[in-house]
Image: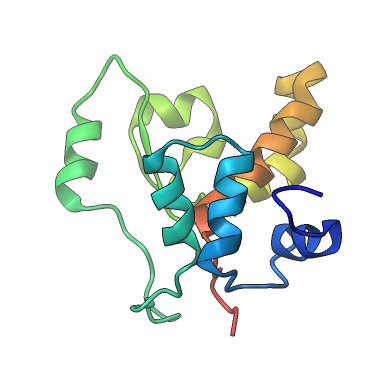
Length: 148
């Protein structure tokens, strides 16, 4: 048992089948994981339902000022990534490094479907795909788009 909760309940939390654990459960998990007060507060904030949601038809965009800023960097590849790992803006050097870093490309989708990505990462394929999925989960937060 972790933090005095059953392994079944812990599994439900990990799988997102229980969206609102009690403060008592969260505090027990924080103690078991030896989280500091800031990490514990973040854990509690993740369990709170979001108040405002973006309308599903609204597309995410990089601010024009940021797009202009990264375009001015001629010696540094740079791109802006959206909430779900879509490339929202990129400078010419980033796109030259890899077409994956071009506006409109979803990095997770390209990681799994673009054979060039797999060729480029070679032996690191498992690590890259694991990290891509973990990053997407972290970015999606506790209630991904489409969750009731």
